[in-house]
Amino acid sequence: MPLQRRIPKFGFNNKNKVYNKPINLDVLQDLASQYNLEVITFDSLVEHGLVGKKDVVKVLGRGELTAKVSVSAHSFSASAVEAIEKVGGTVNKI
Image (cartoon, rainbow, N blue to C red):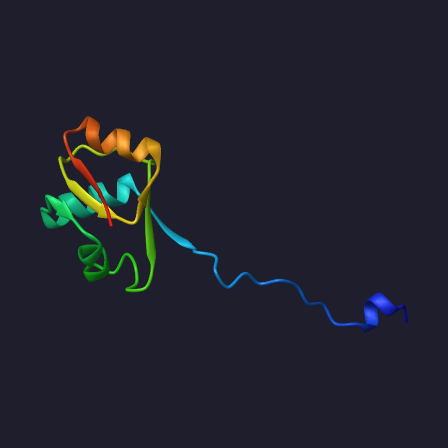
C-alpha cells in the first residue's frame, strides 16, 4: 500500500475562527410582526429560540423588512443596514 494511504489524514483547525449565525431580514420581519416587537436585541433572539447564548449573530439582507425596528446584533451586512435604515429603523452593533 502506498505511503500516502497508510498515514492518517490530519490538518489545521483554526481555534480562533469566529463562526457567525446568520439571521436574515425576513426572519426579523416575522419576529417583529408575530410578537409585536419594536426593539430586537440579542436577548430577544435567544428568548425566541433563533440563536444560542454563545452564538455571534450577523444580520443579512435577504428578504424585505417593513416594520420600523431597532436591531442589535454583533455585525450587519451593508444591504441589511441600508434596508433597516430605509424603513426608519436603527442599527446597534454589540
